[in-house]
Amino acid sequence: MSTQDELRQLEEDLAKLKAANVELRSQISDMGATDAIERAAMLSMADEQDALIAELEARRDALRSRLGSS
Image 1: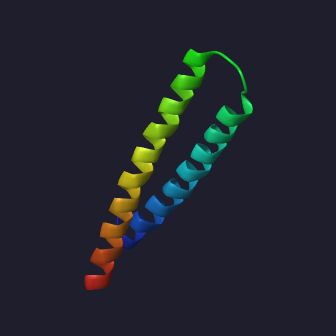
Image 2: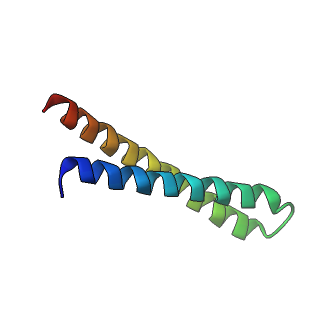
């Protein structure tokens, strides 16, 4: 896979993950008073997605830098 192809795939994955994270956080806020354990688990999952998004954004920036310097 070329760097350009990898970058394109990574950007698609990043967009999907960001959309899923927004939806998850929306669900959490719509839950209202509910099971605290379930809510905490969902918040933890959303936080893990945030960390993954940050890693993917760093990878994307590195790929862009590599493409810019070649």
